[in-house]
Amino acid sequence: MNNLLEILDKEGVEEIYIVTHVNGDPDALSSAYLLTKFLKVNGYRKTYLVVPKGPSSKTIEILRRLRFRISYLTNLMPNGEKFYIVVDTANPEMLDDIGKIIYRAQRNRVIWIDHHKTMHKFVESLPYKYIDDKASSTLEILLDIIAGYMPIENLLIDDKETIFLLLSLYIETKWLTIATDVALYWFSNLLNYLNIKIGDLLKYIPRQEVIETSQKIGIIKSFKRASWFKLGDTYISITHISGYHNIVSSQHIRIGVDLSIVYSYKKKVKIHIRASNKKNAQKIMKRFIELILSRFGDMEISHGGHQTIYNIEITNKLSKTMLNEVIIDALSKISTEEGLTLEEI
Image (tube, rainbow, N blue to C red):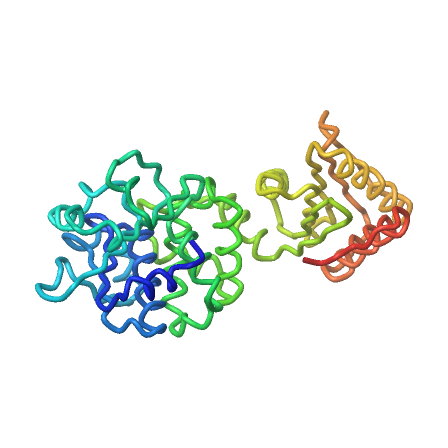
């Protein structure tokens, strides 16, 4: 839906109610909050955020830890011609009594935005809806919609707002394990914008919600630190992390990267390379290993029986900057040999 404001203008909307499901979770509340703020900035001053029966206890606890207050209603205002935007809700029954009111509304007075698959006749009958059941959160859908009109950063004045969005994406995507490439893009983008540490983010999550494993933290750090390149039709990511190279590279391949290069440099200099099933990616990987070998000579190479995964351990001591330059230099030579351009994206 890249015509949200155009729809509101066409329908002559004055009073808007953005409604979440009963006891809105972080994904629902963050989506509704961001959309409310966006509409107010664009002249729709009478825009109200409604959370039937209030946010969930988990959401309230996160807001308390964050010391971030969000104003919301638990019911509709009595007067005025209303327009409804429902977010993160599979069907009207999840809206409590407000659902009955919306169900009776004219179809062109309702917009439905969600990432849950629905077969509900009412939702299916709406002329204005954006339902993407391949998305891992409603927030990523809203971020994409709003970004079509203005930079997201222009809406985020308070750091706490950005942290709340990050927490919502993190929790809704089960600590990024089911995150789509869109969700990962926005998570990485917001993390870089705020320039915070992962530990600073996790401390706001209630204990029962936290998977306190260095693996999860490593994955997040790898996306934050990554550089992204394109060599012909091959997409390459380069990042550094002290451990869990295999897990990190698999996550990068999972989101569509063709060649993942993960290195560490503190105790030992290691380069881990994983290629997708794409033939060009595997060809580049093999040539990359040859170039690294010719440069250092004294190193150990292992692949554990996997022809698309290699580990290189170099005896030379190298700084992060030097090692990154070595990797970029090898890829640049490959691009020259193949008559291609190595583009940073």
